[in-house]
Amino acid sequence: MRPQILVVDDDEKIISLLRRSLAFEGYEVMTANNGLEGLKQMMVSDPDLLVLDVMMPQVDGWEVCHRVREGGSEVPILMLTAKDDIQDRVKGLDAGADDYLVKPFALEELLARVRALLRRKAAKLDKQSNLLVFEDLSLDLDSREAMRKDRRIDLTAKEFDLLHLFMQNPRRVLTRDSIMDKIWGFDYSGESNVLEVYIAMLRQKTEVCNEKRLIQTVRGTGYVLRGEN
Image (cartoon, rainbow, N blue to C red; front, side, top):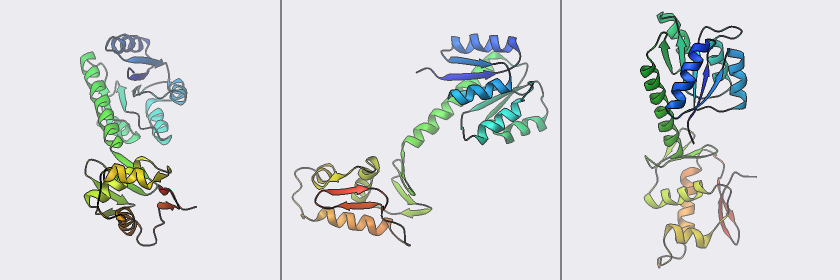
């Protein structure tokens, strides 16, 4: 899917220029002529980037930026302004903007900043995709590090693989045979109670200081990652 960009500006010439230029670069472009309309657009869509003018009637860009962040959105925001004062830049960044470009601007620079912000967002999403989270338990696939709240959990290679399997399948009952096949292989010929031993070790490491049990036993079937009832 093409990245979607919302441009909010009360200057029709800017709107027209950016609509054509961004569309030519392959982006899907939405526009709004004032801050209030921009906020309404944000409520019904989820753009990949917001290009936001500062000086607008009804609701200015600073207020739009503040409300967007207050609503929990992490959309990258590039603010446009005719003011080059340091205080105005600081005000925009404090409101939650990611970048700031002064009018009149070179189109090439704006397009470069758009690409940079979209790359930054993509990198962040990619990083998040390598972090599995269930309640207060997290597993970082890049660093192979597990955390329970702010407590680091040291895992052996097999413990990590076992916890990874559970984190990939939260609230799904995994049979003993399926776990053995995925973690130890179908031709495993070692101790018959190896899974029970590793489950006990995982519980010992993930359940300290009165932390609730997350890896539950399903009698006669296997195990499941879920909170206690």
